[in-house]
Image 1 (tube, rainbow, N blue to C red):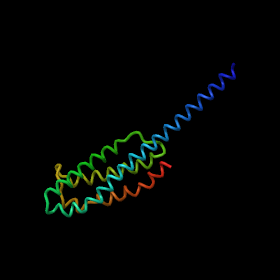
Image 2: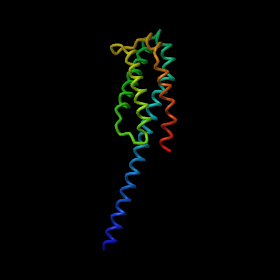
Image 3: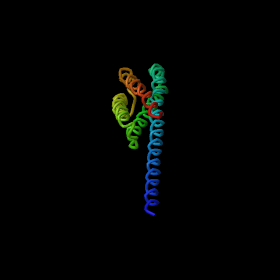
Image 4: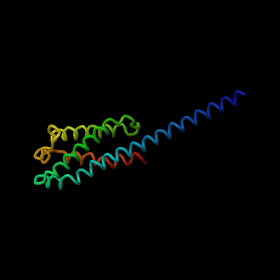
Length: 146
């Protein structure tokens, strides 16, 4: 009878460990997807913005479009920074991403004065450089899922 209890306790322990492991794997996959989506949005902005910036000087509609993209990007960055459910395997990498995103957020706030885009400040900002630095972390994020 004691053996049955002992084996039952061991079996339950193993099952709980496996569930915990699977939960961590699922959290890792979810995080990789969130971080990848976020970086892809940053990358898309970095690809589209130079042309928009060039055209915005002569076209108020394009300037508004660029402003809207920056405001949306700012919201996306704020949401990414708020992520709390980071798997332990990604803690250090997530912290690097948060630091870069906070830097990017500061840069966006500098070019959005009173909620409006200051084209001259955007042209002279480090936003594109910072986005490129964040994008370089994508390979490390993708390796978390493996």
